[in-house]
Length: 90
Length: 246
Ligand SMILES: [Zn+2]
Image (cartoon, rainbow over all chains, first blue to last red; front, side):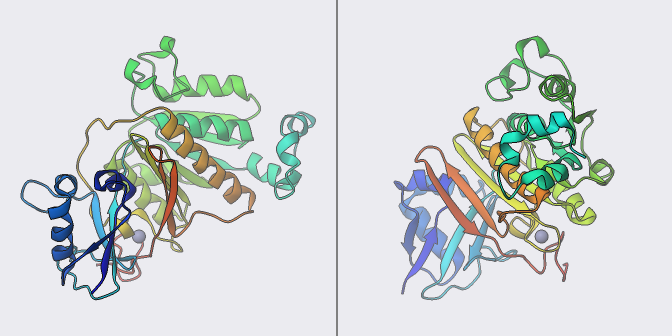
């Protein structure tokens, strides 16, 4: 079983420069939790206090939108999850 | 028609075979709206003006503050308190008096966005918040006007070009508008770099050559000096541009 999370460049600095992190889980939510256990600082950035995904984050599976099931989309061996972050400064 | 002065002023870019006099003429006939005159918008409008884009509309609702001057290169110390579009237009008129620069001191809203961008050949994203970006994204899709998105955070930046109806829009990727409006960290160099990439896209789009940053996001990480891409896929259910809107 190999599912990879591709981190947005802003998050890569928080994961020791890694772009791809191998994770375990049956859904996008489980995979993100696995990632967050290893990199708690990423959790702070992508979740609000209630554990909801922040609105400036979106989760893609194999480049496709998972909205509105960002945390409950099933994933299988070989899938790639992207964490997208909307960058708002100008 | 290009004048003798135009031919002299733009000589070095006219030498570029894909642009030539024909492309230069197209730039001269074009109208570009720069939405926001912060770090992105200042650098973008500077290079649109240099390049000879004939009509440049500058829109912003803020006044110049001291804390803007680390990145907003068209505003000087003497402009503190001045309306940003007028401060910027003054400098641009001195740089290139042969083009038309139209300053508009106005807040972009869902009600006026379409009217503001109507007739433009493209819109450059120089905004500093989520909400206005989504308003302009929607108006561009509705009016069928290309939108060149740029965003920055610290030493990090992103760019993509949206061709309405054909390529993914901002709402395809981010269906809900984030609410947060806070002061984000930003250097001067990051918006300058991103704005110049936006203008590179604008020149190609207006003159009709080269390939565009559509269906992908270009990311710049100034901390590591990496340029990377993410493919963007059009969301058929997108509430803004989808064919099966939900
Ligand atoms: Zn869309």
